[in-house]
Image 1 (cartoon, rainbow, N blue to C red):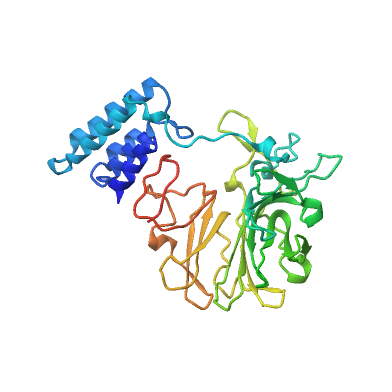
Image 2: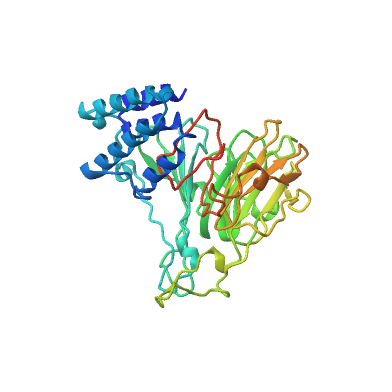
Length: 393
């Protein structure tokens, strides 16, 4: 499988990725050599230029020199890739163009920054694609920030919904759809909370979150109060899943930490005397929330009953998936500068934390990470292009 993937990468011009895939074939044997090479690259950008390429070629040849006789096929892999490089195939592959203006997307994110260095300014909000009007075209929802103390805007910043016209352009339907939330936004999640066939929208904020119920005619109704899901802490992420398999999607809200304008402070940078934004270590974690869908438009907080009331986490990423293949959704939480959590569902909607035993709590060095996003899927084998990211198998 890895060899086939390597060949596909070559034909698509992703030559250094193909080299990495070849190395993955014997990754257990050459783990430390490979780690040395990848750490010699810039952690935030890909290698570019003759010098970087030469260093990588020499480094990979060194790795191949260390391989046993049984891995001679890797020589063929390497030199076929180098031949492709000399043949100019590195210019092949997909190309992207910035079509933001042409597509009609006119959105400016604000964070309210005015020099006071409130830590919320450092966390940019997200957005998502979803077909809100069921016309077969993915629409775009973008989440915005807001003013902070000492900052004023002539018009309150708001989130935006762009309707996909199906011809490569979008039109702003925020006002007509009624989804222009003006909170200090962090992210959003979609799910069909009432089983009527259309997607509803949940927005997480620094402050009260918002639930928009899809009316099925291109408009939404704010049902936050009636549904009882307006948690007022720092909601960083959220996800829908039917945790107890009763036919209705439930809602999980991940909270970051206990920062507020009242406990705002600056943090010194080493011995430089500089006063900078504080990291997550300066604040206490808070409990997340699991809302059970009652099936009547309301939700109940079952966080404690479900075994999810830990205050050790500082969530920035939430994902559901059936990790143990027992037919129910399990939960993984990516935390910032504290251990990550893997909660296994027992089939009734109650969870047990197994992150440490499963090897999913810390990185390969036994350290905590700045977990700022997470996804889940099935794959045969994967080598990552950027060593600052990792996969848990």
